Length: 418
Image (tube, rainbow, N blue to C red; front, side):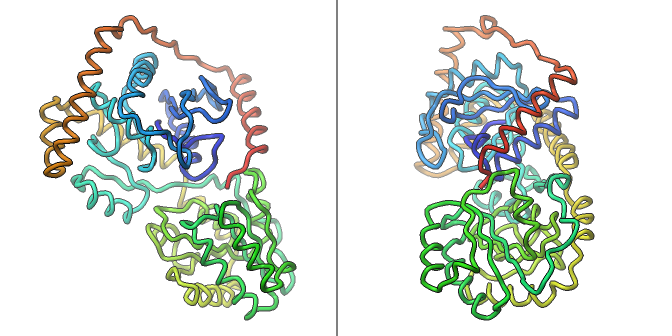
């Protein structure tokens, strides 16, 4: 598993890689994660179930992405692939520089992987698949849709629903432009004006937090809009179960795991109709709106009217059947099997595909791949694969596994998810 985004950074991609890896390990596979260093977290670390993580000593350049080097990562990636006897490389998040470089080097070395110049590709929604096919030119039959999931054991409804006439709307998100923080600035005051019994809880941090603070001051909503700041992972559920409605204002979203977590806790969701969001929940669990303040206010109004008909426990039970990480892992395993059955392509065959990318871009891509191939051959001569020591697999005892799990849970409580 390769991505710039992994723990101790928290988010949807990070959770996806970790939970998918754990389920694949339980299915009998060996899984190794490759990411960049986070602060003083560098080198090799072990997580729950013996999941090995390589924190390569590169500093993030922008938004947790490493600086593109094209060839600078080749020596260490080659060494890790050989040391760990990797048979398939799975890149996560199209915005990850390390992901793309690792996939390029793996392809040069003859490995199978899933993303562009690919054996197979995985998208989390049908909308995401459509975008991927249109932008990359991949044959649709090579692109599979496997949704994210939620750990419903972690996200359970409260024993009793918050009582009284007060309606609490919860927002937990990174307060950035892409997540629609600017929409919240316009929506929250209008909803508070229309409904004196509505209160907002906003969890999350980011550059747009200042605008929300200013909005609260301007409209004198200090007692009706609670700003929590960054919410530790262990406390996300406790925040969710204190509310009745979950509000998502994202401008772009391939899937949105936060909606699953809220629904699993029994909250009715109001969300912008963007990306793959309409595919995530059944119609009776979510009210969709255009990313426009007026339409979002109307959606909240509708959600408040149907709130008495919502049964949190029934919603949680339905989520347990709809989304399960073990099911995601089994479906991903099928894609891996199909990728491994694909025939290896020679460099000339791959170059012909790159040439089709454009009159100038195609030639540039070919040049990049030719240089990558030559550098790989030079590395083979300088340090043959036989001279790289293979790492023996470590089988953890039950007690060791439990100890690692407890350590991770303690670590989890001390870091912010969003």
